[in-house]
Image (tube, rainbow, N blue to C red; front, top):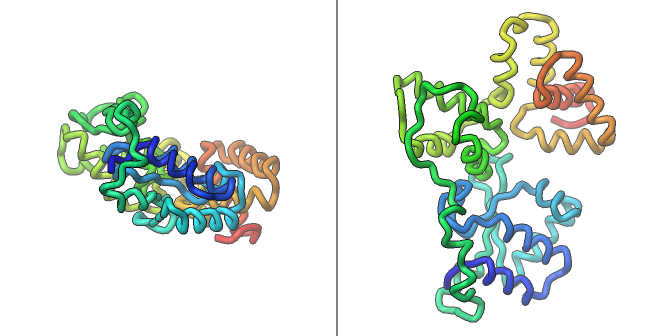
Length: 280
């Protein structure tokens, strides 16, 4: 059968589910890629972290697990897997539709297939990338594409600018003046995270302070809480001190060290780990 938004939505409506499971199914449907390569995903697949899904549905992580089990055992046969590492997003797919090659009762009509056919729904890396161009990715046409494609890749939580700078550095070290745009997507798919990858701009933007006690203290705090799972630390610390207390810590650290907000976030998490407020 031809997989479409309408086909899945009708099946969700027709399937006996709890209210929370219905809502969760539609949220996953909303994130499904309808073209191979859109956001780096296979057609018919969606990518979410469990924390994001819990926030979107407004339920606890424990209740979210129960809802996922309900969808997995229903006619929708939801499956999920995580191919890109412990802290990468989960991939989701309604596998019931993969098994229905000759069933037509839930197939959308011809006028309801635009989402799976319009090329604008595909993240296309085409053309050439000039390696010698400016260092800011936001002055190029690639920022939005990097942001969209990284959602399901191992570099999902790495800053777009950091990905761009490492891609340029990689090609400059090999003497490449220009490369096909597809090389950028391939570079992201083979990403290997380093603990300080997301905070590298802090050191680059202020090299003159690299040896000061304040900068050493900042890096010590950041190192105590690796950047690749910072969302979980944010949730843990917010529960411990409240949203207002969390925001105040970030602002205080930004003022103390004169650093960007993301670096202050990591420093706050590291500080909380060192004092035992949250676990590493």
